[in-house]
Amino acid sequence: MDLRPIGVFDSGIGGISLLRNMRALLPKERFIYYGDEKNAPYGTKTEEEILALSRRDVDFLLSFDVKAVVIACNTATSAAAKSLRSELSLPVIGIEPALKPAQLSRRGGAIAVLATPATLRQSKFLKLMELYGEGAIPVPCPGLMEFAEKGITQGKELDDFLTELLEPVKSLSLDGAVLGCTHYSFLAGAIRKALGGVRLFDGNDGTARQLRRVLAERQLLSDAQEGSVQFYTSGDAESALPLMEKLLAYPIEL
Ligand code: DGL
Image (tube, rainbow, N blue to C red; front, side):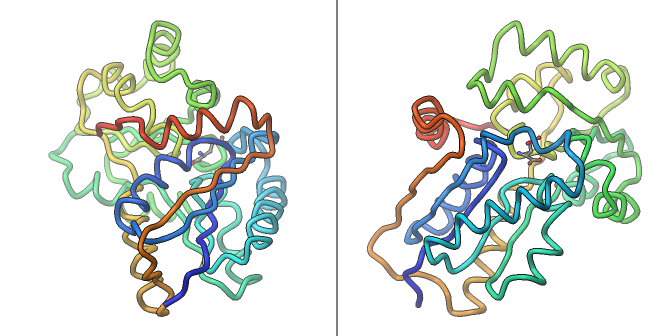
């Protein structure tokens, strides 16, 4: 048993969508959540920049004596998970686009994979495509995370943005869409509407289960009476922290 907290980071508020699943599955754990708002977005940066920022995020979390690190960001997982795992002695859990479950439920139609440009061009994703990419169409979504970051999860501005962004896949016969960026789970309703009601997949549940598995294997689970969440940001705490609290309770319907 281990009462130390679990460190979680993302470029901003996106990872809170994963934090919700982790909280539900591991209610006795303490979570330290760090959003690197000051340097967001990560998804339009180079691999080297994302790795350097991820190392700084981890350094911040290590100052809380965390027992594990969760990279609650598909972009940072692709660019940094491998290096961080070789540099750290504690477990590092990452998230990747949920292409496998989407593929398993495919019925001959196409699957749109929405993610940041950085996630989609990296070898981690290309390998995933080799395994589960049949019928999958990658859709880079620069500019989309910014809506969630501003707390805009519905409305005309977002609908118009999505209509234009998703135009290339809208006419296809889609069986589903993968939300390959943790920010997009907060935009699920608007994305479903823009795609005409398809089934959506995110990697949050699978990643939360992986965290529980790893903690259990290493006897790192907490047996505290109850867990907690503490939020930190590199950005403007006055605007970011209340939004983080709000999103922890925001209903997500995939
Ligand atoms: N939330 C992030 C992800 O899962 C990235 C958003 C960004 O910083 O571009 O990919």
